[in-house]
Image: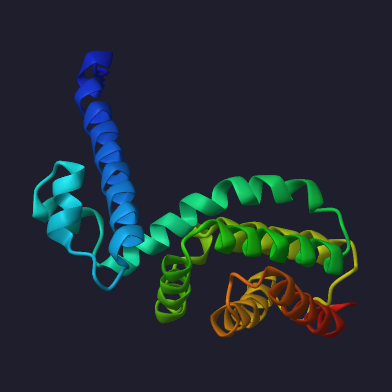
Length: 202
């Protein structure tokens, strides 16, 4: 068997890197346009012009503007999930309140109109989002797995089912409450956490 020499792998790696860079440029250009004119008013032509690519390139990376928003959520959640790693050994109420705090901070960091459109996109695509791609959902699933192993959380539901029961309540409050009223929003979401925890403790 003859092994391919390393240089033969370079073009593929370069293409992969170029594709990732193009995707990032499109994502950043789209978000800038969303913040400038709103998501409904943003035109793909303006996005691709700012990114320096052809119109068709946009659709090679993103099926719709919703998918841009979902990609942005995944990217923004990565550092949040990394920070929450330190809370994986905490009791359910403490961990879930910490997770809610991070969600509130993420929403508050974005332009209100874009934040709301992002929440709507998540709700609209809830059934076809690959949960493993969402860092917060992935980390919370791991948290519930560990909490079950510690005997803190009921085991008649899988960790994935617990995640699927928790986050829709959070999303509902975020959609109903203005994300710029952080104090009231935090109180409402803490209430969601407290009610949820009462139902899942072992």
